[in-house]
Image 1 (cartoon, rainbow, N blue to C red):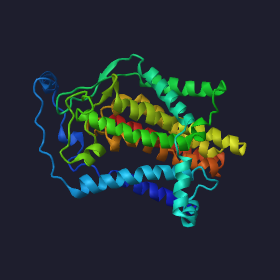
Image 2 (image 1 turned 90 degrees about the horizontal axis):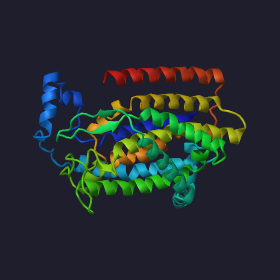
Image 3 (image 1 turned 180 degrees about the vertical axis):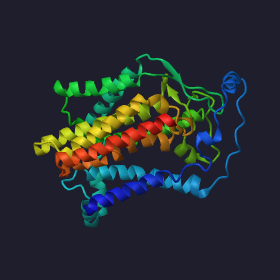
Image 4 (image 1 turned 90 degrees about the vertical axis):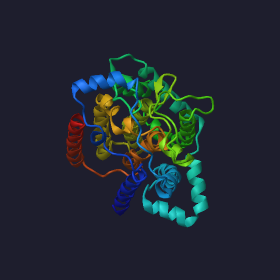
Length: 375
């Protein structure tokens, strides 16, 4: 129990630290841009293409905010993801296990962590198939919905097909396992190598987006909201150089944040519950209902996806390490930590106890949905 409490505290601190390096100018869009009247909104749409609003003067370069904190996060968070991937594969995935391994020899621990998270061919095939299916569903037509007009006059458009993705992707995943193409536990079985590939690939992908936003390597930005922040190369890589990047007509933020990141999180619980059953010969009530509550939450997310595309993650945060690497690697690695730990270390909950916690979880999803509708 003590180890679990320590893990919870550590995760809370990590989530807090991720938000400490946000730019000083980040504020709620509701405070910055009060909703205009219908007449002003219509005129604003018409004028936006002709004249972009003036940009606020950039804040002064800060050694702490724009160099040290981003550097700290870009070094520690990838390392943390590798360590947790290794740790949750141990017979006793606790902090005591980690402390004992570190005491036995930090060099040996580092070698074990790297070996257990080294990308391999199976992880490459898994992620290629995962992304390919997501791309196929992404191409399904749907009603066109728009995001808010950006400071420089861009108005992103999205085909509203998220519920097709929400239904078809899990269905294909389960049917593929039923057909014997792979075990339902495939995400758990290949987790370490998958994290390694996502991490190294995500870092390289962020470098590509950095160059694209600055019109380098023969690449060009997809819209007017691009360019350097004026706070140096390190911060530009961390924060991003483009607001709405596209590659091959695919919106990078929507595809990475929703169709890859959230989908992996959605299916991870299902796969981890299957892995637990194959190891222990029975279903773990705590793990099964935890996976179910996450699944329900993410069904809600896809139902509200267009609302998410109008939120601060999309309309303010640029596509850099903070946003894009965070969704590609941090979400699959850390948001699944509790369910992944329960594969080797069962919850010990009865069905009534797990059901009571599940009911509270559903209430939380309902509150979250109501908050989404209000904002």
